[in-house]
Image 1 (tube, one colour):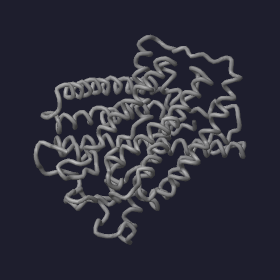
Image 2 (cartoon, helix red, strand yellow):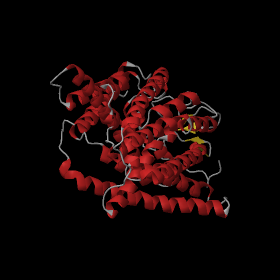
Image 3 (cartoon, one colour):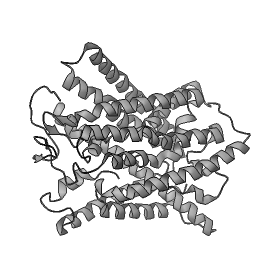
Image 4 (cartoon, helix red, strand yellow):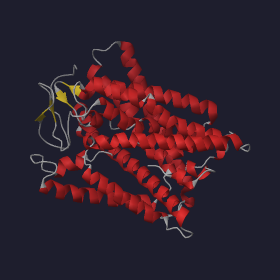
Length: 428
């Protein structure tokens, strides 16, 4: 990969270590580098990141757009998301340096401020992604409890139980590489659940004669809601953590990353798009932000069964000792406790996450997945690339920067309009 010349890579962590390929170096990390297969990473991309919100996507993605524009936007975002992730993969290596963190790559090419800004965007992505899983798990447990009790406990108790479960999992399975055995079981369970869910949804759709697909609201509201829907579609297709995920792949890392992306954007797309489309078909414009609320079938069908702690682990763990050494186990325990107490508390306090998915997509994922890859291309290849390629990436930079601003305004507007409906620690 040709760059503009050698310069020192800056990172939130200091130092350099030998990478997994000859004459390549990467910044230090407490987590495993260059170890995983592309199949493992492909399954993880297809069945884990952001799927905590999948049961809200019918309402968030299709209700504001309707069938025609909804399907068009889903296809366009799917194709463009595959393209920008495919484009970003080769920039994992620059001038003999392997960049294992997105923020370090942006800091190397631009500035410390850009490194910090990228870290903030990724932290928001990680935080809201975790909150979606914790909230979904809490709601599922509450539904199970309601089957066996006439006076079920409040939602916050089940969110707490889910948060504790997540903490235990994150402590004993501390890295992406350590998830290997769990991913196979997760893939089977997730797709089995999706099949069962779709069976019930199709059954309901055949008997529901009262549905309509009218886009409701004033013209201004419909316009802003459409931008919110685009943000939600971006969430369904992207992680904002490609560089970190790619760092776990064994060589050749670029080829293997692209293979994993093909898994995500082929079989994985059925996982993310089939449920929203069938949910909207079955229940129309009145579909709930929590799809299982609409199901006429058994309540057990409302059950739905990691994110990267690399920054905290690399900062506080002793990198010269084993991940499971006594000192590092103790430190990791307190780091995970702190993270999941904060995460679980926020989820319990604001269990009305649907509106925040739009902010998640517009403020953090749009720049990370659509704007930054073109910025990287312009910085590294701008002087040698053909004029039409440079023009294409400047066009992407301008258009998607504008889209990020507009969709963020739309997301904040929606939250402000609904603020009176929100009740902290609501039992919803």
